[in-house]
Image (cartoon, rainbow, N blue to C red; front, side, top):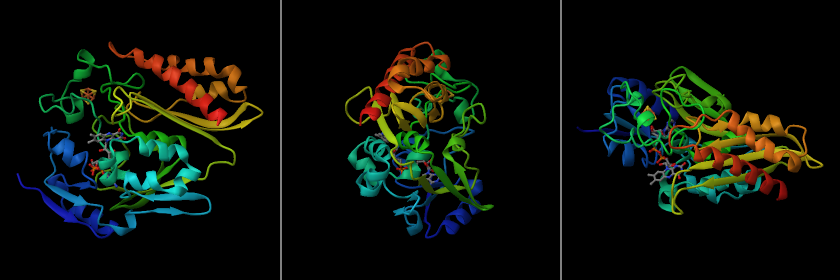
Length: 331
Ligand SMILES: Cc1cc2nc3c(=O)[nH]c(=O)nc-3n(C[C@H](O)[C@H](O)[C@H](O)COP(=O)(O)OP(=O)(O)OC[C@H]3O[C@@H](n4cnc5c(N)ncnc54)[C@H](O)[C@@H]3O)c2cc1C
Ligand code: SF4
């Protein structure tokens, strides 16, 4: 099968091409480390996940590349490489957890061509999904092989029908930073806060975010944090080489005399979407952090529904929440 590749020069051109080739399952591509290097190479496809005959390159659109600093936020173009985020002094100064999460993505080589938009919108890594022999719900089939199969890396929160964990490290940090996605499509432009950007299987098992057919993410806007905000990032992996998160935790919070004023606690590797642990935030609000942290971190147990082989991830999540918040507090 041949694949047509178009280099778009503007967002409008990319959106027009997506519309024109919709009947050939056209998709946008950036670094290609997930779409081409994984999904297409491994013939990951099905009724609900057709193989694209047309690819539209976004990295040729100048407007989508770069990091812009304004008085009250930083805007990152979706085709900016992950390495550019890692190397940005502005991002390090304002949002160290975004820099750390980016630095934890894959390997230096992949970060050099993998992009921010590709990282946030990459497809899940469930090993049944990535195997061509398993026609599961997410490919349009009628079964979830993780329910009876090896589910050690699957969701412990929010799974239903499908038990993937969202694979993006940067998305977990961006959710903690209350970022917003800018989106363009044939119907115009819109912005969606990261709180609402990701879609779980209950809403639609065939996708992981709010992008409608023919839409692309153009930028991510990260608002300045309140002065004195404490931030922390921890990623636990199975292997001490490049790997996806077994559990990751991002925190951003304000403190007054050791008391939690306001903030966010987000987790990767636990749910089909980057997960905001409101139960933990609520348990900490207005309380002395050191005195409350153990009980607050244990609140994650009240929302966890582990599968047959992954109850260990609940213990890891609880411990990592506690450690990340205490480390941020001390910094
Ligand atoms: C060996 C390996 C290890 C990895 N490890 C990690 C890891 O530890 N942590 C992690 O977070 N990720 C990891 N990744 C995942 C991912 O490949 C990289 O994170 C990279 O950032 C993806 O960017 P890309 O530009 O190459 O994406 P592409 O492959 O070009 O695109 C990925 C998907 O996003 C869509 N897309 C791309 N840009 C946009 C846009 N602007 N708007 C809408 N949709 C878009 C594409 O259509 C495609 O479906 C790993 C990948 C590999 C191959
Ligand atoms: S967890 Fe989701 S992606 Fe994995 S086999 Fe089940 S339905 Fe498919």
